[in-house]
Length: 177
Image 1 (cartoon, rainbow, N blue to C red):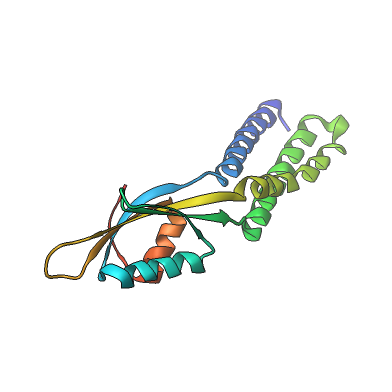
Image 2 (image 1 turned 180 degrees about the vertical axis):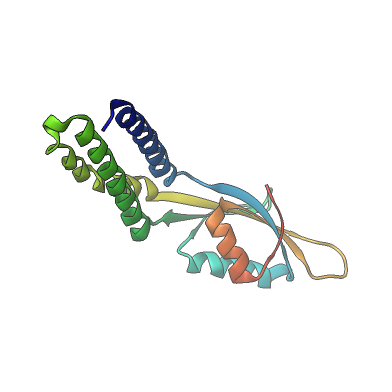
C-alpha cells in the first residue's frame, strides 16, 4: 500500500480509538437530573406509594428534612453485565482495528500487534469498578391547594431512575431541568 494511505488510515484509527476511550469513560458518568411530576393523589396514600416504590428498588431512607419538606433515599448502583461485556467487545474491535493498521505500518513486528486484543477486558473491568457507587435520590412533595387532589413531586436523581419512577407510578411529567 502507499504511504499516504497508510498514514491517513492510521490517523483515522487513532482518532476512533480516542473516541472509544471517551465513550468508555462516559459510561460511568453520573447522569443526575431534576424532574417535576404531577401526581393524582395527596397525603398519606401518595407518600406510602413513594416509600414502597423506593424500598422495592432497594433504596433505604437516608434523611428527612421537615424544614425543606425533603426526603433523601440512598441506594447502591449495580453495574450491568451487558454493558461491561458490550464495552469489552467494543474495545476488542477497536484494538483489533488498531492492531491491523499497526501491522501494516510496521510489518516487521506484525505478529506482536494482535496482542493488543488482550487489553480489551480492561474496558469492562474499568466500567465495573467505576459504576458500583452509592446513589442518592432527593424527593420533595408539595400538596397543591384547591378542589383537586393533586401533588407536585420534585425528584432529583439518576435519569434512568426518574424514568422508571414515572412509568411505575403513572406520574405526569411537568418539566425537567
